[in-house]
Image (tube, rainbow, N blue to C red):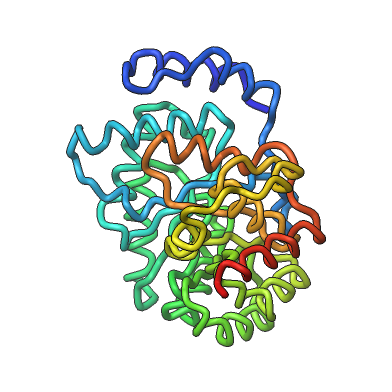
Length: 309
């Protein structure tokens, strides 16, 4: 549940933004409808099941382009959102996020996840320091090896950074199922806090081995590409949401797709790319109300499969 300080700060900010006022009713709802959370297995720390992906936050110092991003992050905070995922390879995204979080004064509200992709040694250490400076954080919540690049050299550096309390969690990521075999081997041999994989109703390859293995090893899973690179919305175009979706409080296609993802027992959080308030409002609803049970997940899969015939 939101603390009063965060709620009042969010209200004050949005009240000064004519294009995106957040109604008193909406704020009341956030107080009475806390977001669904899941625990990070290695510590028990809980985070909401819907986060934000920021690969389109690299807008530089353009005030016009930054304005909707600032509003989106303020609204995310107002609802109690936490995990914001970024990377050095996302252009100026780290700097933009660092500046916006500082302006919003929500440093303690968010769980910031970034990545490293250098060749190891001093180059990786320099990149981690750069990310820390850009994100204006004394320590980073999560740093993962991006697409498992040079993981043999980078994981030991991340462990040193964790021991020195420069980062709190470490992990590896991929967005390609072709890397799952290597990821499985790493999960078997290394101690990790997090992995990040591509997982959606349209792409369930991770279920074959990765998700169960992560659960068995006590590793948190962040899901990316949760809308199947947009293919899910194309598949349901012209179709009404099934009436039975109301049984797990899915009132839009985005919520149905995201609730499907985060209802998997191994998934800790989903990070749909979110740059606009109306998308944030829709996505965050997937972290409210009920999630589909195993039978309802199968019902969703059967329905989706009929659309592909």
